[in-house]
Structures are given as C-alpha cells and as structure tokens.
Length: 178
Image (tube, rainbow, N blue to C red; front, side, top):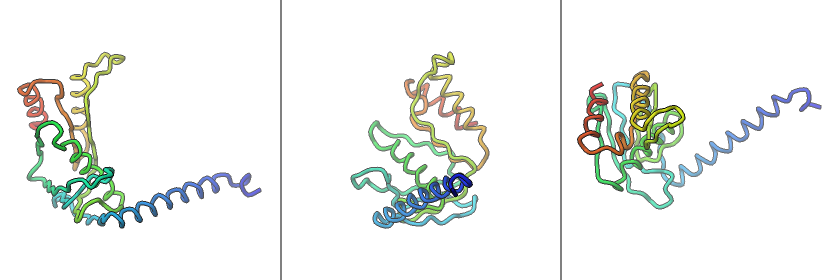
C-alpha cells in the first residue's frame, strides 16, 4: 500500500541505497590502494598531484608528479608514441574529478583548485552526416572548449592527429595563442 501511495519514496530509497553502496566501495578500495583525500585550494594555487597513478590499471602503473599553475598554463605535453601521454592526461582528469566530488584520489598528495569546467578531448573523427571533416570537427571542438568559463582544465589528446609535424604544430600554436 505504501508503494502505491508514495512510489517516489521507494525509488528514492533505492537510488540512495545504490549511491551509499558505491561510496562505501570507493572508500574500501581507495583505502586498500593508498589513495588520499585531496586538499581543496583557492584558484590562485596550482593543481598539484604527487605520485598520482591511473586508478583503472590492474598492474601497478608508474606514478607521476604534476604541478600546473596559472603561470605555467598553457602547458604542451609532447613525446613519442606509446610513451604514456594519453594515460597521464586521463589520470589527471580522473584525479581532479574524484577530488571535485569529495572522493579519495589515487595519489600520495593532491592539492586541487576549483574548476568551472573540466574538458578532455581524445582522438579525432569526421562526421559525414553533418558534412564535417575530421579537421572541421577538431576546430569546432576547440572553439567550444575555448569558450568555456574559467578556470577551465582543458586536456586535448592527439590534437591535429593525422597531419604532418609542421601542420600539427601550427594548429597547436594557434590554439595556445588564443
């Protein structure tokens, strides 16, 4: 009878039960794996991650240290294929999202300022049904990302993929200058 009279209460109870279980499991796993609670710092302080690691990898990945301050932005990360650039970017974004939600972070220490926007763009593809080439899609995505409110953590992975070094460098330079 209660379920018929108050169906939303049952749905809410099930939702909260699911959230509680997810949070409890995150806490258990994060304690087991040595995650830390992030310190939330003002916008004027840098994003700092010490011995951060990709939490989704089953084997123990190599940890990294990272500090990004307003004075060091924008920062360009380059390196050879298969050197871990994409994994590093995903790990940074994952750590910032977890910290922003008040959850434990896969790092020894984490100092995270607030961000109005968190954006990560990976890969490149065209949209033939919209008559957009991969280049047009990439430029539209960059335009939209640069229009986001500040402070913004914008991570572009494989930007200008499929071009030669000079063209890719020119595109990256134009985006950084904007």
